[in-house]
Amino acid sequence: MAKQTAKNATCEQCRKEMKPGASCVMTHLYADGKWWDRIPVDEDRKDHCGDCNAPGGGYHHPGCDTARCPICGGQEAFCDCEITHMGDANAALHPVPEDEA
Image (cartoon, rainbow, N blue to C red; front, top):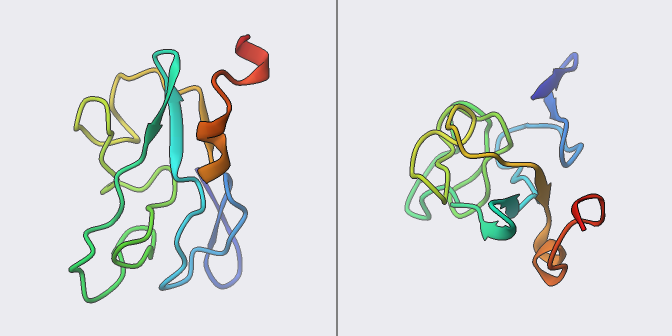
């Protein structure tokens, strides 16, 4: 889910360059008719994620091999949960994405 640039990949969801220490702003995902809080990178981590460069306490970029699904606990990028949308902290204020209403 990342677009490669000359320096680092760019997250296709938040459009941020995935450089060391850059957390994704997509803190929620939508599946099974509701918004779920995404699981952040372990806060005790002293360095950044080796796959997507997110910092400890930040959020993995979508498609990261180490991001965990908050629904099933599996790898978010490869689980069978039907994740239809991702959103920032304001997403949870909206009960259902407009195209699913």
